[in-house]
Image (cartoon, rainbow, N blue to C red; front, side, top):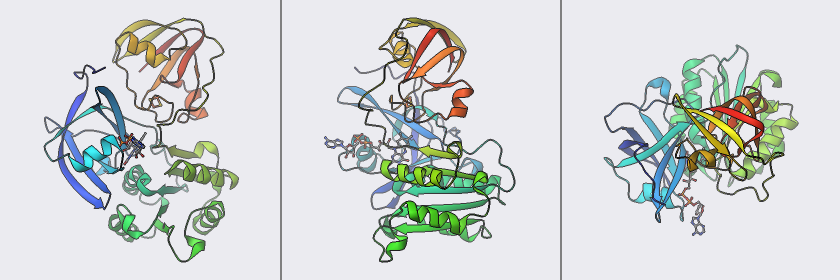
Amino acid sequence: MPSDTTHFRSVIITDIKQETAGVKTFTVTYDNRERVSYAAGQFITLVFQHHGQEERRSYSISSCNDLIEQLSFTVKRLDNGAYSRMLHDKAKVGDQLLVAGISGLFTLPQSIQAGEQFFFFAAGIGITPIYSLIRSLRIQQPETAVVLIYSNRNQEEVVFYNELKELAAKSNGKLRIEFLYSTAFNLSRARLNKALVRQLLNEYKLVSVKHLYSFVCGPHDYMRMVIYALEENGVADDRIRRENFNVNERPAILAMPPDTNAHKVTLIHNGIRHEVICQYPDTLLMAAKKNGITLPYSCETGRCGSCVARCTKGEVWHSYNEVLMDMDLRHGSILTCTGYPIGGDVTIEV
Ligand SMILES: Cc1cc2nc3c(=O)[nH]c(=O)nc-3n(C[C@H](O)[C@H](O)[C@H](O)COP(=O)(O)OP(=O)(O)OC[C@H]3O[C@@H](n4cnc5c(N)ncnc54)[C@H](O)[C@@H]3O)c2cc1C
Ligand code: FES
C-alpha cells in the first residue's frame, strides 16, 4: 500500500563520488541545507516506493561527524538490487531522498580508557561504518592504538584505499592497516580464516585481550568466522560489536512467545503517550502500525537496530535479536520489530 510520506524528512544529494568501479558515495543535506547530525558507525534509513509498496534500505554513514562533514553514505551497486541500482544509475545531484531516520548501535564506547586497543575487521563494502569510526577515533583519541584488517578480492576493489593509507601515514604508527586480497599469490595472507585472525591478533596486539574492542562488518559467513575466532582467542562477546548488512532473510522458524495473551502497551513516542493493545502474532511494531503510530524501523527482522526502544515497565520477549547485547537488554533496551509483551502490561519509550 502506498504510504503517507509526510512524516519523513527529505534530504538533497549535494555530491556523488565514484569510489571504485561498483561503489559510489552520496553526500546529502536537509533540503533547507541544514547539516544532518549523526554519530560515527550509525546508518541512514531511506524510504522509496517499489511496485506500489513502501520499502526501506539502510546505508552506513561513511563521513566523519567529528570533522563536521556533511552526511555521506557509500553504496555498492548490486546487479539485481532495486535501490542500489537506482542510486547508481539514476540519482543525480539535486535529487531528493526520503529519510526514515538515523540510528544504529555500532558506535564507539561512551568512555575509552587509556591502554585500550581497537581491532576493526571489514570485508568489501563493510568498510563504510568502520571508515567513519576509525576517523572519529583518530580525532577523539589520537593516542589509542587502532588496527584495521580489511579484506577484498584485489586492490582495485578497496574502497577508501588512498584515504586509509594517508590516515595511517599521519598516525605516528597508531593506526596500522593490513589489506588482505583473496586473489593474492601468498596464500598465508589472502583469505581471512580463523588461523589468520589468531596470527594477526598475536602480531598486532599490544594489550591483553580484556582491553581489546573489536568491530566487525562484512558478509554473513565472514562475520561469523571472525566473531568465533575472536571469542576463541578470549575476546569477550560484549567487546565484539557487529554490523550486519544482510538483513533480508528471515530466520526460518520464529520461536513463539511464552505468553501469547493480549497486553496493554503504553507507547511514549516523541513525548506523546499512546495506549494500544498488542496481541500475538502482532509484534510491538505491528501493533503500533495498526494504530497509526509511526515508529522507526528498517529490517523488521531483529537484525539492524533501527527500532531500538526502552522498556520502562513490564517485560518484553524477543523472537529474534542479533543486535542488542546482554548489557543493552539489562538496561531495558528492546526491539519493537521482534518484541512481544509478556507477563502483563508494558510501557515503551521510543
Ligand atoms: C544497517 C545496515 C547498513 C548497511 N550499510 C550499507 C552500506 O554502507 N553500503 C551498501 O552498499 N549497503 C549497505 N547495506 C545494505 C543495503 O541496505 C541494501 O540491502 C543493499 O543496497 C541492497 O539493496 P537493493 O535494493 O539494491 O537490493 P534488493 O532489491 O534488496 O536485492 C537484494 C539482493 O537480492 C538480489 N535480487 C534482487 N532481486 C532479485 C531477483 N529478482 N532475483 C534474484 N536475485 C535478486 C540482488 O542481487 C541482491 O543481491 C546496509 C544494510 C543494513 C541493514
Ligand atoms: S527494524 Fe531492524 S532490528 Fe528492528
